[in-house]
Image (cartoon, rainbow, N blue to C red; front, side, top):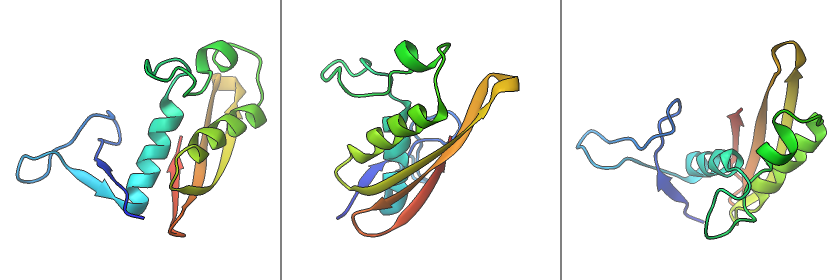
Length: 119
């Protein structure tokens, strides 16, 4: 499996350029990790050509009573819809005092390469 994706800036999630001024790319485990994050940042209904993609952030999570188990399952489901992801394991920690959460998704791609992304 050869996976390649446009490189996104880790803070702004915008396209980046390489040293020659061309669109930068990433491949293999880095591309897989980046694609997993993109899938998990997608709101349900946001993709106009397939409104079944995404996580129900607005309808079932943000501002609603929910559990970390539900959020973890949603993150894992979105990661696993990518054909080159063999395994995905999400861990979410709720910060109730700050009304937020953080976590990680550990991914193994179909090449057997591991990567981890922070949320």
